[in-house]
Image 1 (tube, one colour):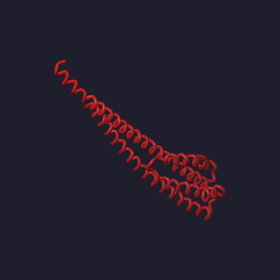
Image 2 (cartoon, helix red, strand yellow):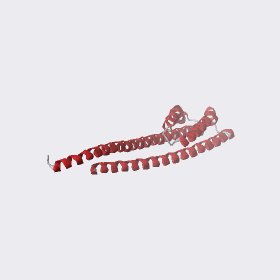
Image 3 (tube, helix red, strand yellow):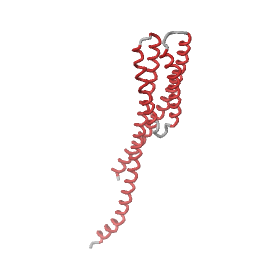
Image 4 (spheres, one colour):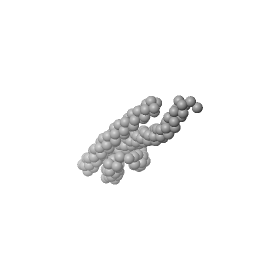
Amino acid sequence: MPLHRIALLKNLRWILPVLAIALAFLTVAGWRVFAAVHDATIDQTRIRAAQTASSRVMAYQLDEETGIRGYTGTGAAFFLEPYDAAVAEMAGAFAGLDHELEAPGLDRMRSIEADEKRLNRRWLLTIARPLRADWRLSPASLEVQRRGKAIVDRFRSDDSDMRMGLDAAAAGADSNAQRNLLYLLLFIVASLVF
């Protein structure tokens, strides 16, 4: 066997283990980068779903309020349609929001949601039901409406805090996803160069 072939075989004996180690490293690194991108995408999806669920809860609260206000202002029963529909859907909307707030990093939002639930129950029991039972305008009903407005204003404030918190979480998830996609791109380029 010529000497240059023997030298080549000796070099290949070291190259193959190095290539095997490099391939193993690239496989592990690629998997970790892919998993990070996948997790970031899931976080984005869950936060977007929480934003949608929160908007649904707020819409139902406003439908409840609008229905009762229309009814107390006119006595026309058709104003109760959005109220009745919202009352029927609110428990499911809160359940959906509760589920979506299980996403990592949204713990603070759970206390806001709990306050929204409490405010909605209070509004239904102390404002909506009494006004629905006696819609006629009187000093007592005006006082109930004033208290109801204060409760709904507090609900709106909680909703604003919820939106700001979810928006911040969404921005963080977007930034994390972008960073992980950049790592994935760099990994692909490094793999192609190697």
